[in-house]
Amino acid sequence: MFRYSHDLNTGVPMKSFIIIQNFLTALVIPIFGIIIGITAVPALALFNYGYEISTSDPESYLIELVGIGISLGLFVMTWGISLVMVCGIMAGITRPRIAPGRYPLQSFITIQWAWSMIFHKAALFFLPNLVPSFIGNTYYRLSGAKIGLGAQINSPNVNDCGSVTIGERVVIGGKAVINAHLTEKGELVMAPVVIGNDALIGTESIIQPGCTIGEGAVIASRAVVPKWTNVPAGEVWGGLPAKCIRLADGSKPE
Image (tube, rainbow, N blue to C red; front, side, top):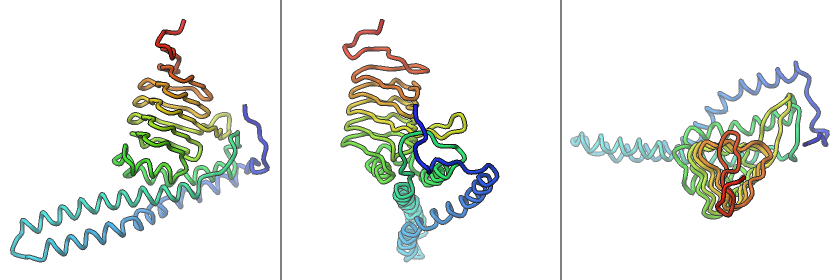
């Protein structure tokens, strides 16, 4: 379906690719540590403030314990929100701005794509605790996703945000997976996913690259929508692979 059309698609020799891949993999651990450390700074400041207040009266041990406990709770929540927001910003900055198509798996395009996903993986330390909420939606927007008003995203698994469009009042169920990429035949395939207004994506369902989900359509729980599938408006799809189980007029397909 897609053809190579850019000089950037040029592959990297196997040996060179492995060296680059291993080097970048080794960088992941310190980068994770730096991200976690930087985003913990405001949380540590808040904790220290609460700790000083709670220990100001040395004669009240119970008050001290309660104060420390509350400070720890505020530390965790502040750190988690800071981590998710910073990761969203970094994911949006580093996301690959490439046209839909097929790219050699051993290429700089693939390296760039994998590098941008590091920040999403870091966000997953806390993102599952922030969906659905305006904080989760803000993270996805910062990462590059186009999200309409009133969308309820109850999943931390919206990947490749720069290639995902979610319409108004869309509901995405828990643990649903939306991918705008796949790998096959030694290639990275990038194709946008578009979900129309008022659509429902069921719990633990999977939307694969290149799919268009029409307005008001319903994807049943645990359904797997194959790549480059067009789900017409108002229809209900379910199964593995997903197929139409109810037409827009409420009747069953023949």
